[in-house]
Length: 194
Image 1 (tube, rainbow, N blue to C red):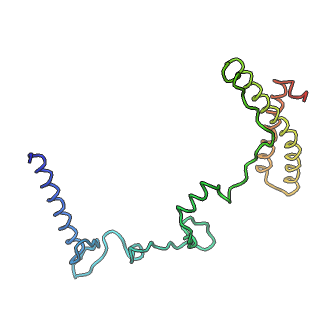
Image 2 (cartoon, rainbow, N blue to C red):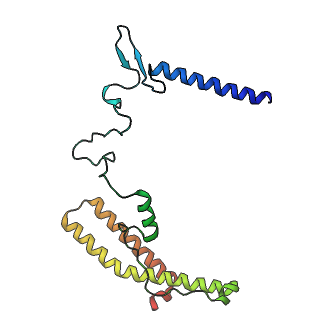
Image 3 (cartoon, rainbow, N blue to C red):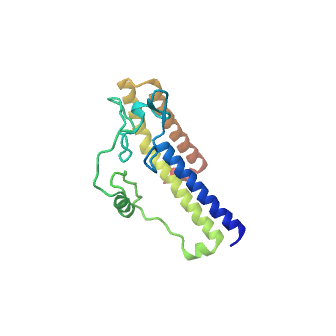
């Protein structure tokens, strides 16, 4: 054997022995048990790291946190479940999460690029321009229906006595939608000629 291999084996054996001796020293008579106990004068044993309630009594079960009543503590224990996490994850992957909000799917069929458009960069640029214009028209159409609804919501918020900050948030949203609609219509007058 080569000298470095022998040195490595001896080092591992020495470290293993030191770990075993430290474990017996810290854990008393039980090899492999570590209690972190230290004795003081008079034979009184106390914990050097954890005290009283902090020290776990049974390491096989996790401690139950005590949450104050009426709080939304993330440490509260979950209700026991007999659903396997791996099965649940697989089902969500295959079929989606039943608790997720439904996504809006545009019912109109999407225009696909033709093979000629894909092959010719100029034709493909024209295809992209049509798609971009379609998106801008859809934004303006959606803004036309959303703006009156937001104005009604702001009026209701004022009548209900919501704070000025909450009302200002709605007004800012309305202002931005109107500004984007106006910008799109000024940059592309053909949008208004639907």
